[in-house]
Length: 121
Image (cartoon, rainbow, N blue to C red; front, side):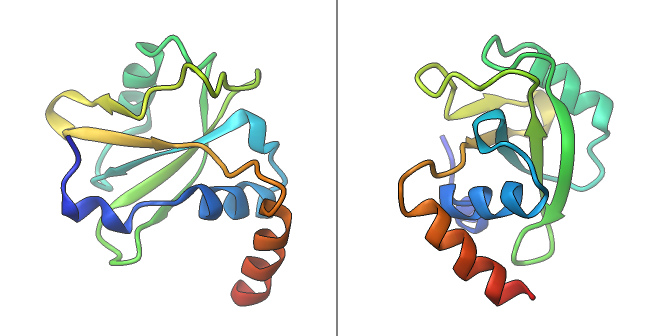
């Protein structure tokens, strides 16, 4: 379903670092993308509202992929995301499939976040 061009997408570790840097609860966020930067926020909400896994999600942040071409969006939900029910991807109609990545919640995630913060400062 996803091709090699999506290899620059977020990993569970980078999603954890991203939400921690923004002070967000990693149990309530997910990264969605990659998408073209021209995608409007209203369209993102329209697609995400069709997924029963996300309860009233909001776009918390966005950033370009490592190539600087595509956009990855961090969404936040007021409720914890059910990690057992979340889909690995979403059909975004004409915008193609979007991958969904949840933050790494392993014991090593805090250590990875500390290392990532040191690299970005």
